[in-house]
Amino acid sequence: MMKKAVGFDQKIQLHQLDFIANEIPRISSRDALYQLVDERLMADIGGAKSRANARTILFKIWFLVSDEHIELRDRALEMFQHATREEKLVLHWGMCLLAYPFFKDTVEQLGYLFHLQDEVTSEQIGRKIKGLYGERRRVEVSVNAVLSSLRSWGVLDMAKRNTYSIAAKTNISSSELKKWLVQVMLIVTGKTVIELGHLSGESCIFPFELSVLESELSGNHLEITRQGIGRLLVGLK
Image (cartoon, rainbow, N blue to C red; front, side, top):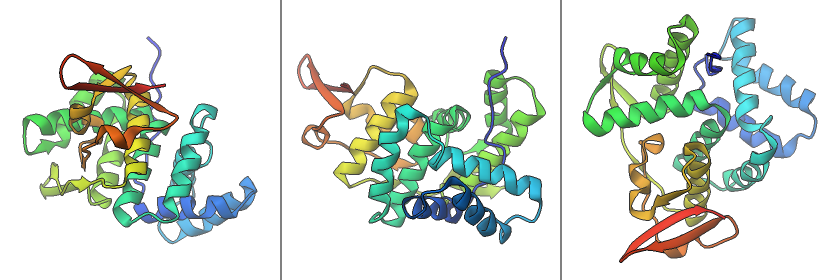
């Protein structure tokens, strides 16, 4: 069996994500951006190897995106310019889902567990992810990197050692952002359609409240279909 790629192996802070998302529209050269991000990270991360890891992750999330996600990234950068703090978190979250299947799998498993219980231990989530990725030291390191990132983003609280709860749900009110996030969710979950009323229950967006009206999803990318009485499904065009 081919080992699944992990990749997200370093705690990433929101101000680091904010920094790269703010700089990309201003800087055309990859090398210049590299330099800037590296200088910025020096304040947070002493070790050169850890700093290089963090830089790789930031670049993969916002800059070196795969061709099929460039349009989504460009829309995200546009929204980022006038986004609130909460909206910026949603944009970073969506970009992380697109860039790192490991991030998506970890937050999705967290979401499943939080549907069942109020608290989740790092051991529980670690077991779930090792079931998907194998018993590797790297997997353990990356699960901890995702957990400590989510904690520093204000998504998770740690009441007692290694035990997490959801800090607070963030409500998404911008129609443009809702449309963007629904598109991201359809791509990363691989689902052809999701019922409109079930969008908020999708585990990969567990920290967010997402209630969507049919009228908010009109546009070039999404398609609404009706099934039976009152069931509305959304899919990609």
